[in-house]
Length: 71
Image 1 (cartoon, rainbow, N blue to C red):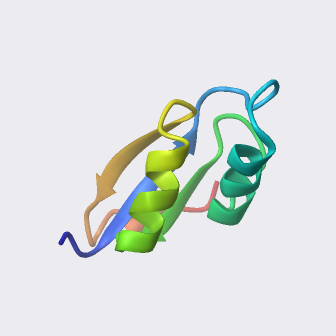
Image 2 (image 1 turned 90 degrees about the horizontal axis):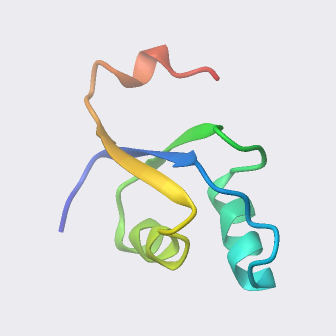
């Protein structure tokens, strides 16, 4: 199991996709296209990311990189 943080970026519109996928994006904290959020890398968030993997981009976050987050 991985630990730490991951950056999730909303890349593709959820218009026309199922309601539960749109709700998953909201649960991750994503509201607008190209918005990024840093979330803990846990099995729960990995499952959420897996559900909407066709709509988001995921990258690991280094410990010193998270301080620059504020978009």
